[in-house]
Structure formats: structure tokens, C-alpha cells
Length: 234
Length: 114
Image (tube, rainbow over all chains, first blue to last red; front, side):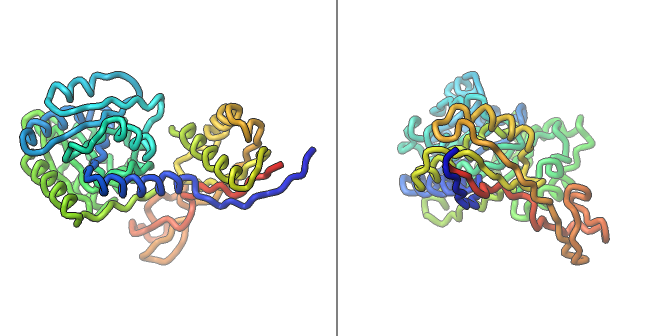
């Protein structure tokens, strides 16, 4: 047996990713790439929302989408068809993206000619919330059929978002136990500064407010007046 | 759910520390894990066994997990209580104005090297 010695480390495991994400945010600010991290559970309507967003911004904002999935290419194909540049990132079984994977995607994608890049994170309300991707804004989509109790069940997701889009509002008459005021209260309970927009990617209801928010963000980002988000590990 | 990714991240950090300290072999790693750190110790241990075998410097490294009890503080009545048993609601006064004092840690405490 050899000589043993102990090295005191006392290093937080997520510190590495937090530092890397902060660095990536600086790199993206320097090259003028505005990155939004879009999260939701599977089936909440990320791709449908993006398709309508692309159509609404066509001609005025150059937009790219990075699709992160465990496997498959259906989302990237749908986005290309809608008229934005898309890249498919395969996470190789991972349930979330971290800052390093995001950087690799951005570099491969080549984002310098784009005004806005949206990262469509893996459909999951748990792990993506824990890893800062380096994005300037974190947006989540909560769809009406999922229920208005989700902010209570997935606190970190709601805490780490600057905006929640409540999607599929066209089905509110059917899902009549979903209470819009209650969901707003519950989101604010987790995150008092969080903005909430009610919309339907299918009918286009509420989209004006979302598109206007995007335009304001892009403006603030270009002016350099946008404050980076605070990331909570728990 | 993401224990394997977390293990990769721990290994990467340990490899960095080992390189800084010119260490060739790590025989033991001590992690401090809060009760509400969202990482499940048993899954972590399983992923660890699988992942370390693929490394150069810690193929046989033993993993010790020390649990840190989660404690929540109530702003309204000023009392502390165990988070896992009572959650967000204060068991003394029923207030929701509570915050976590400790228990979300995930720390590489020390490593034993040869």
C-alpha cells in the first residue's frame, strides 16, 4: 500500500457549470448573440409555439433554433420548414443541457448572423432547471392540460424562469378546473418577478404580448441594458 | 434522474484537482450531500461504480456520501424545523414564509490520494 494523503476540496459540484455558464453568457454578449433557453414538459407545445413565433418575426428578426433531444430529428425538420435555421443536438441520453453542451451547439451552428437564438431544451421540468445553460433569458411553457398545480410541484423550474407562457388557452373551456388567477399566484409564490403570458400557439391568442416581449428583450440586449438572470441551484 | 451527468461532472472536477496536485491515483472521494439536493444517493453510488471504471486516475475509487440534514427557517415565528418531514409549511405556525437554511449542498469534501 502506498502513502495516502487527503486533499481538502470543499468544492460545490454545480460550481463548475455555473462558472462556465457565466463565461458563455459573456462570450455571447461580446458577439451579440441573444440566447433564450426554452423549457417545458414533453408535449406542452414548444415546437408549435416556436413555429408561430418564427412566422410572427419573419422579415424583421433573424432567428435560429437549437433543438435538444435525446434522439430524433422531427423537431429540427419542423422548424426548418417554418422558415428558421435549425440544428438538432442529441444529448446522448442526458436529460438536460449544460453550458458546455450549449456552447458546442452554438459553435457548430454559427450564430453570428442571427438576432435571436432559441434553445429548445429537453422536455423535462426537473433537470433542465438545475443547469444554467448560459442563456440570457429562461422561458418555460406550461400548458393548460398539465394543470395549475405545477408551480407547486416543480419549484425550481418556476424559480429559474423570467417568463412563463401558459399555452393551449384555447382548451380552457374544457379544462375548467384550471384557474388562471390561481396559476399566476402560484408562479409568483415561487418567483415574484416572473412575468406570465396566457396564449395559444394553435389560435394565436395572446401572441402579440409574447412577440412584443421578445422585441423588447432583443432591443435591451443590443443596448447592453439587460441584466443577466440569477440562477438558483435549488 | 440526472445522477450520471452529475457523476461525470464530479469526475471532471476531481481530475482537475488531481492534475493541479500532481496526483496519479485517487483512492477515495467524500461527498457531502444535502437531503434536498435533488440527487438520490443510491443512484449516485450506482452511476459512480460504472463511471469511475472508465477513468485513468480513479478506477477503483471508493465513494463515501455524507448526508446533511435539511433544515428550514420560518420567518414568521423564528423557529427551525426538519424540511423533509414538513416541507414548505411551518409545523409550528402554519406560515409559508419559510426558507431553506441548509440541506441543498452537493460538495466534494475531500479526496484521498496515493
